[in-house]
Image (tube, chains in turn green, brown):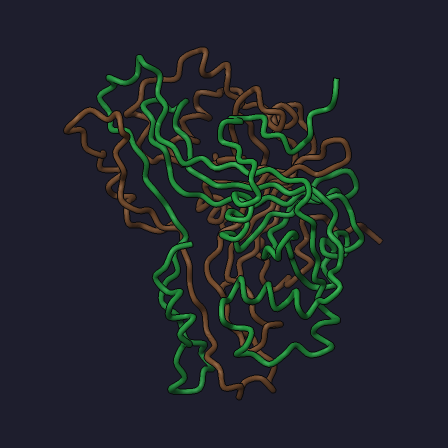
Length: 213
Length: 213
């Protein structure tokens, strides 16, 4: 008897994907990951901005953050990304559910060898087109930022994009059934209160406004 | 010297809230929580649909789920809710950030004494107005569902809703600065493929479509 790998999807395995393409698609659609570590025997899970960079997932934060310090030291971690895509209205509460995409990555984070390049990848993922508009980070800023990566070695991915699956006896219930989709959408840009008069949002920001991710 | 409580917000404490009203507002805006436990020394964090019910937070899932079984047994847990509200375009990568609302709850989940009422609260939070349209859950369905609650005793809440905070020397940089808001918005309802002809979405679904949460 061999131990099942912890990345085997146990619940609703028919929703599990096995391709790196599926994993990459979910990670690339996410801006925030929930990263968990163990501290004094208790789990701690906090949100961190994230960006995939090839075969690794990047996060960053202050070197003063306890979570970032624990991650930088290589503590065991679990990183979970969840994108909610809709509410599934079945004909019973029991069969009602959500449409979602999710990924889980286990592993140990390590500082990246080139933190400025890591910051570039993170910034371009979170704020597309922004890196080249901004001055380069100072040495002090780089020193104060922990840029970490976990390899995409041990992972699972799950996509729920279906329809209500009702009991045969419920199909005649006198209720509507279907899906109410949801998406994270960007609104219209808001100028900073201290913005110089006449300065307009760049094309990349205007292009993002009104789109969903 | 006393140990700082783990719910003390250490990073950017000026963003921390201390009122139950602030906590409740964040939890009530969330449909999904990320719940972490420790398994064989490694953290595990998975998304679960959630709903606040007074002074406790409810989650539910299959009694066959390993996570739900561990939670039902009272294993130490950390539950984190994160709502992304926008991207903050500062005049440096270092000061760029996100608008978000977040809550963290530590504690041990326990099965609720009245699981059908818990399912009602969860269903009404996830699918407002739906409970009374549906048949009651069967005994078998209730037996197969784990409905758990963690008390809102040990928690923190943090709201980042500000503007770019730039270094004085960056204020003259020739770039736009501001916030691109984002929100989770509901789209138009999609009929299930097996829906009987002529059946229309109920008012509660139509009212939700097009709104943000």
